Image (cartoon, rainbow, N blue to C red):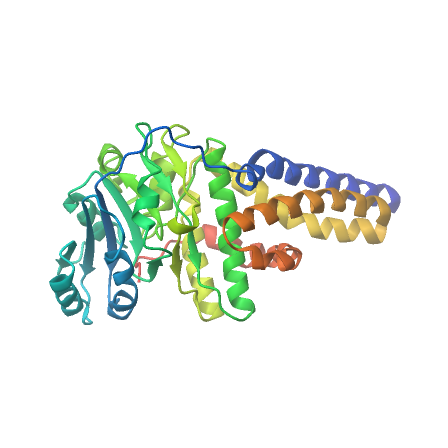
Length: 373
């Protein structure tokens, strides 16, 4: 085989990789880009139990918890905060807030569940204690984006819905790291929302997630993956969600907002913890996610080789097809998720995903951390 044949094979491989990428955009991601919420013929409000787990989160609770307590929701609801063995002033803060907000119900845990690492035990206690069928989950470092968060999330339910996936956004700040974190959050949401719309839900984020107690108990809670510290959100959804029982909510009033990581090491630790749970996904989900990541990882190196060693015109035509499709999908999806300020940078971040995959690929094979804080 001579070099001409070799570069030709590389170019054909590049075309195949591009075709795979185009498939994901046209079959999955376009669903979020053109998503339009269906008008409901009937409307019903449901009692809701908001559940927040906290460990040494007094500062975050003081800042964010009032956002969950002042919700404009006329139907019965409660806000449960599970204080998981905190050593700070969480207990006293909750006692003070409870004097003003009667819907606040603190649960004080003073014993560790040694065989159940992570947040699963306190979250299970919160769900079992909840008075209402619909539970709405968020974190202590999150605040609802509006005072209609509970109302907007619960209105997604109908008789067939058991799970509602929400969007957990990050606050916009200056700096490259902030844009990278929000880009990665958008890119993940593009995937799990689109898969859900395609009838293949595979994960949700604990920053903004709702489901019914019935489905939690039907699947015996987190028992299938109690040994994994993380995954109280994505692994449970991966196990319990189906094409019939899951819906998404991308109404801006239904978002939650969180403070992003302030350092690169903080961000890397968070992402490493998340990807260490991916090995427990269903085989079909693992295959589809891995194929997308692999094709994404190979796309730009093969493009560069094809431009330099084969035919730059042909290579740029193939690149242009994907680029136009990608730009349309990203623009419309970012607009829906209120991340449109990231659009001018999407090509830079898309190229940077090559290094992102290199950085975190080994996290998939790591043993998950035993702590959630």
